[in-house]
Image 1 (tube, rainbow, N blue to C red):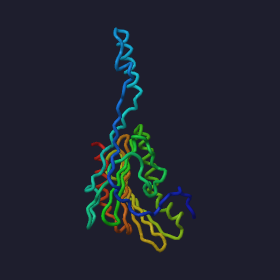
Image 2 (image 1 turned 90 degrees about the vertical axis):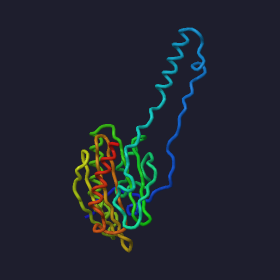
Image 3 (image 1 turned 135 degrees about the vertical axis):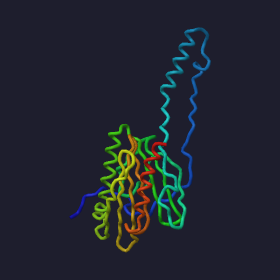
Length: 239
């Protein structure tokens, strides 16, 4: 039986690696018009100048909320022979989007952030955090991501009938308002096996997704350590 799936750009791409560092901050200078910077004499002119300045400040775009705390490299499951490295925390979604999550994560201006991690070998990770407008909206997003992770193996198998795939629900993690860990193994024909772990968690109005990936099978996945990583990711959202 075929399962209808969402089409993905790179269903079985290499594990994510850390990008080169780049700055995402910019400085905005508010310049007042000459009539405000050099008002005429008298109370009426002073009141008009103050009103004009207030209108300009009110019209200026609000600064984006600071990004929630992200995982440090050493908070990921240890690699046997390589330290983890990490790119900057940047606005928006990673490109490509995490495996099995194409179109599921919103790209909220100022509210969606990401960080990519890598090692010297085939193991990599990515974390995406979304600050939703309400806890209810965050709960809906977390549920959508969990459905994607739970159905990932079946969706991939439907798109790749000559390969094999299997998934595992590793259950909830006692952290935040909700946290859940899933595993997915995919084996394209005549190609390397790949294994991914997904940690999906919510704290209030904030949702975070952590994907860990490398070549191998579910037997190779550091599930217990990744459960700890997922709990730490929730804790970091508060700081």
